[in-house]
Image 1 (spheres, rainbow, N blue to C red):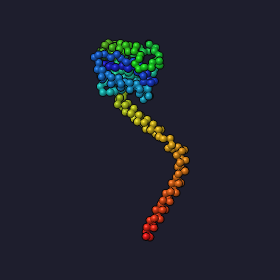
Image 2 (image 1 turned 30 degrees about the horizontal axis):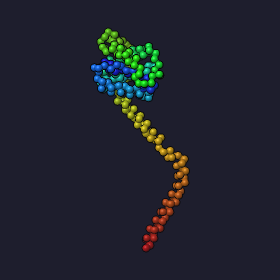
Image 3 (image 1 turned 90 degrees about the horizontal axis):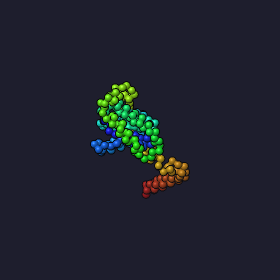
Image 4 (image 1 turned 180 degrees about the vertical axis):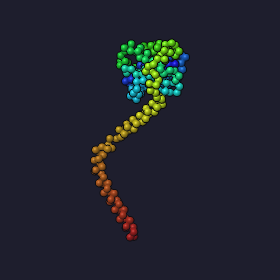
Length: 219
């Protein structure tokens, strides 16, 4: 079944709406999955997930999502739930969202498009029972929602890429934050001025040390 639905803006990863939470749901687990969904939205905003239709796998669940006109529609489903039906559900959400003709660029606070939460709940209920005539017809229809036509990836791989990217970014920032004197004209001037003096002092010290050694030999 569909356990969680998120709708978010791709440009900045801002979550706009979510499915209603019911008392019989496992709220602790849903909170974790919700955070993972928000992470996926942020990855979209970074351009780390370029595809507009995908399934992201994790433990016994998966996130299915589509991106339409800069809006991401995402559904967390049991791994046993038909992927084909999940994408029909997301397409229906997209159609309902388009009907509202909302100016999403004006939304600034997370989950503040509360009006759409109820619509998500209504559409989601239609897809709870996979054995209804309407859902069976969708499962038997041939279309682009076929699972073989949809890319999939493990969430762990996406997280690993993100960590690698953050590590490279930290290394790059550390390099940029090195004192500007190093590798600068100032350092070059200092080197040109003091290097000859250092060489003279080193040679003088060596000669004095050598003469003292010879003097000791004669004593």
